[in-house]
Amino acid sequence: MNPGEQEMVAHGFDEADFEPAGDWLDADGFGAPGLSLPDAPTGPVPVVAVVGRPNVGKSTLVNRIIGRRQAVVQDTPGVTRDRVAYDANWNGRPFTVVDTGGWEPDAKGRAAAIAAQAETAMQAADAVLLVVDGVVGSTDTDEAAARVLQRGGKPVILVANKVDSARQESDVASLWSLGLGEPFPVSALHGRGSGDLLDLVLAALPEQTAVPQPSAGGPRRVALVGRPNVGKSSLLNKLAKEERSVVDDVAGTTVDPVDSMAQIGGETWRLVDTAGLRKRVGNASGTEFYASLRTKGAIDAAEVALVLLDASEPISEQDQRILTKVVESGRALVIAFNKWDLVDDDRRYYLAREIDRDLRRITWAPRVNISALTGRAVDKLAPALRTALAGWETRVPTGRLNQWVTELVQAHPHPVRGGKQPRILFATQPGVCPPRFVLFTTGLLDAGYVRYVERRLREDFGFVGSPIQVSVRPRKRREKKR
Image (cartoon, rainbow, N blue to C red; front, top):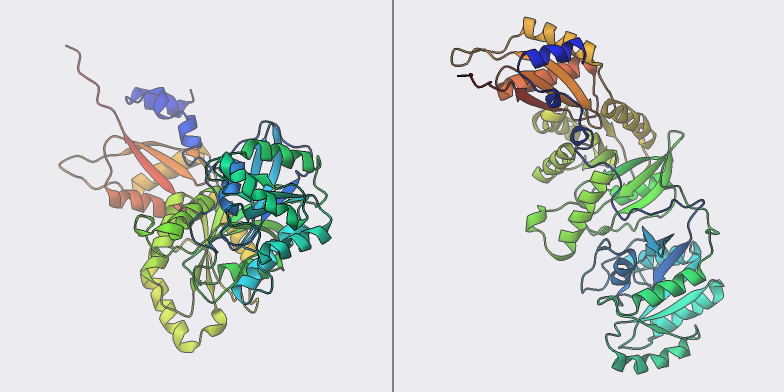
């Protein structure tokens, strides 16, 4: 033990009170969620795309393949809109499965954008699963999809979904007419035939993908967060320089988190477009409920959250609730005021007053004024993200921290309460990401004094763009020996 720790023992603390145990270092469970793979692949893993017309059970089949309920599913056509990649593993072999929105020929408007995402997924895959409704049989849309896949020259597995019993298997024979070979009957909902289907998938996939895929590690992970229709998908497309996410004037277009690699400020970042948070998760229902859960998971898996606010509209209660959610998650934070091209002088005046009133508790977060539509100032996001991550990873040496605490207590001691004046005896920083501090004291500290300590920590050590967690451990009372 160092001299400071010896002093703590003398004041009645146990050694376990100030050892940086694992529960402190991993309190946030930081890391991408999902199934851990037994062996890391030596190269880019192969990719299989799941395509088909709307409401044939593609997302249900994806959930069955990856072994967890990750893709948003609802008994309504058109829930999935973007192409979303998930890590999967079967018999010790990793691969990537890409869920897509419903594909329809000659689609218009948003449906055309969804179909374009599905076509892109087909082109970037090593094999394709064409999912059809085994009960309904082939439709004109299925036949059009089959013709497109026949021209693609890639392995195609025809999956007849919703075949829940052996009696229905004879009905899928008509699907031979699609010209894609033998249809494979499965029930994605009940898991019937899924294991044999995965064996077929592995047989069709190469050992490594022919399409270069970005590595899961390396680039810093950024979650684009905000209420519906603030421009998250537009910003992702602008930064990625491709139509990676479906954009529509109708709020709530994005449902599943959409990953994409983007070059910002000469550095590669992994951006995650998320569903707009409209209501409290407990009050949401159906697709919105599951989309909210996926968004929360994307925030927890990210390192920094880029919260978009609509600069042309007043800061709403929902905006403040989203900011609170990010702060409570312990992620680094950057605030981007989007649609700046719609802001006039009058709006700037009122916006400045709203910021002073509604964002006064998070003045430490960097703010950037951008326009995802025109590309205004989007390059300024990279320095703000780097600053926030630097603050998120800042560690103060224990010696310097306790010297600072001594000077702080001498200059501004805790007020006397009930004839007693609690003192800070020792401080330590058991973890970063976000920075966490523990104050060992002679008694409980007022909440106002703890906030004062946090404010002074920011003033003297920075922590720009990062929340700070300060906890207090009062000294244990020793029982008197009789």
